[in-house]
View 1 (cartoon, one colour):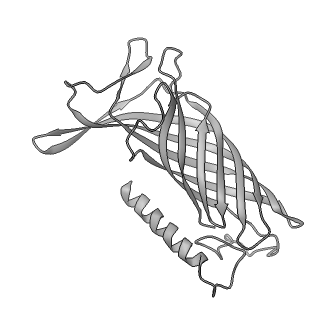
View 2: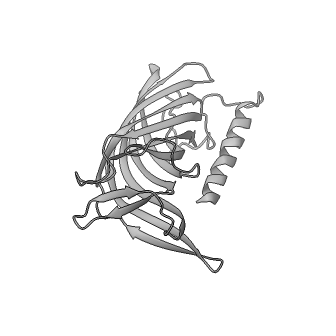
View 3: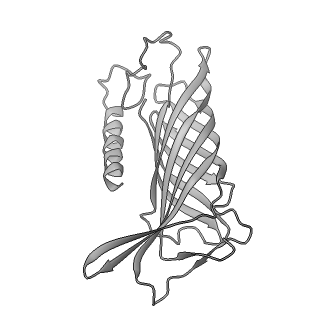
Length: 242
């Protein structure tokens, strides 16, 4: 996971340097894969498409029973969005985006989640008797993003994207890291009381192929009414590869 994030930071740096180069010929296809148009010849070069493969590098946290930013700084994740940019040639300042996406989120915390006999989930601070050093709650989501996209006509292309998303969260795991005689051991606890349906909103604001990113889920993390109420949110940046 750390290697993937490092690669994305390198891509981010290369893209930012490329935007500062005054010798570049193209000013209308921002992204790391500027000239990639798919597996078929481009039918209409004047009707330019943007933000079709978007990668979000995120810090993950919760709102609700736990105050934001109480968790560790390394609560990182990644979203991969494969999008269609639907626009008319007459209006290059507005378009509609939709597609398919996958999100991995990890929240690293000192707290622990306890599964009760009625299948509800509660949260507890780490006790002196607990032998784990790190606890993380990891989730996997598959969802459909829908976006309204606004952008300036200038080649610098300031953009604002407002979106909503709906999908499923099939996997939710609690992973403990323990150390025994200098060796690391991992213990995974599958959380069965997960909210399978997920839905929320997100935004991006930036220029060309780089943007700040934020997202919030309206659904609670756990399904049972007796479980602790947590709403996931994300902050980070986005890179549009083409």
